[in-house]
Length: 336
Image 1 (cartoon, rainbow, N blue to C red):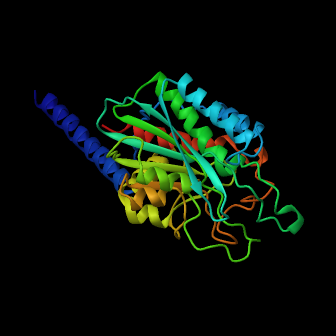
Image 2 (cartoon, rainbow, N blue to C red):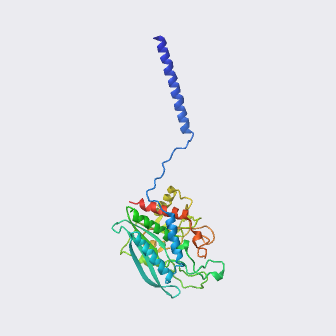
Image 3 (tube, rainbow, N blue to C red):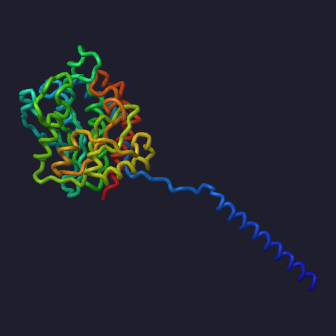
């Protein structure tokens, strides 16, 4: 019994020593800063299809320049109305005529697709569908009076929203969505025009809608504007008016993009103030609206193809379309 007791004592002592070593090793491992597994973000929105968005952009470009009051513009507008109808939207058209800076009377056609009109909480998604009548950023003066195709500046935002419309028809989010294509955004005075009359000659379609929404007393929880969202090297900075009027929405979008792995496009940095369709929407308090727009720190502040004849399908990149489209979809499908 004495030997057994002594043996039992030795076994207990050895086990205690081993447990001590094991615990010390475990503690040492924790203190060494070994990486801990982080919980992976789980996406709640359907998969955005960049090939589909690309094809919608390509179709718009196939009409040629979409300058208001031209047959190409009218044909493209009919196409947009047909696609929204195909994708289950309740479609409205808002038409009026404005007198522009050059004295010309120009008809405006804003196109609106409404999803789940019975929902009280709504989010508005915007893009402009017209194109600039002149390539006034061309270095060669003989080319500056030619109209641009506007694959990026115009068609890219519309193409992304058409793909989102297609997805909305397949699976509804918890909120109502209004997709609004603004007309006559890009016909401001040209660089080569001398002494144009003072006035707000840009964003005429959104100016009209913001003062005359398609539904009386319309208000949205927030809005997202897409402009020039197709370039392969696009960088979306936090634009000034967006931060001023909708800082919480800016953070929501940029944080969502980061969680989805799109941080290389959505840069966490503030920049200057851009005149775009979100300005009249914000100023008239229809919806605190953010502009997702490709901005640069040098030159004009925009991409090199901006307002030039190089704004064609060569400047449309599927990865960028996916980054924008999936981010916007994740934001709206996360709303309650």
